[in-house]
Length: 97
Image 1 (tube, rainbow, N blue to C red):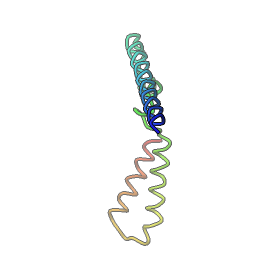
Image 2: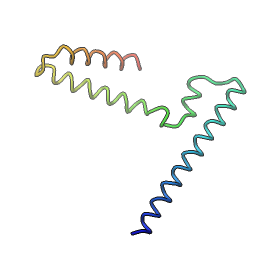
Image 3: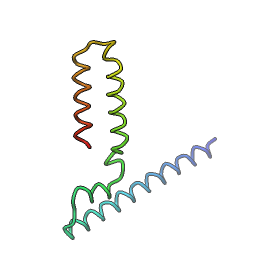
Image 4: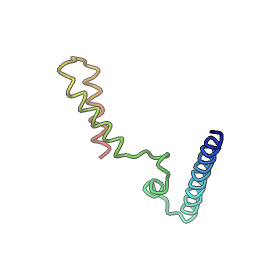
């Protein structure tokens, strides 16, 4: 049992160290790009870890699903706030495309 705990701890430490190495590599790449004056938003986005820029497709899918649920429930719930929320989410999704 104690051996399993140690293995889990070592795995967590190794994963943490790998994440730190990735972040250091990203910082080096960003500094190099800055020094060479070739940085734009797309470059930064491509170099960043997913933790810094969540998967946009997943966010868009979640917003679309929320809009669909609000649309389905609008006849059952006559709520002005839900209608405004649905419209706001729809507008955000349109602007993100």
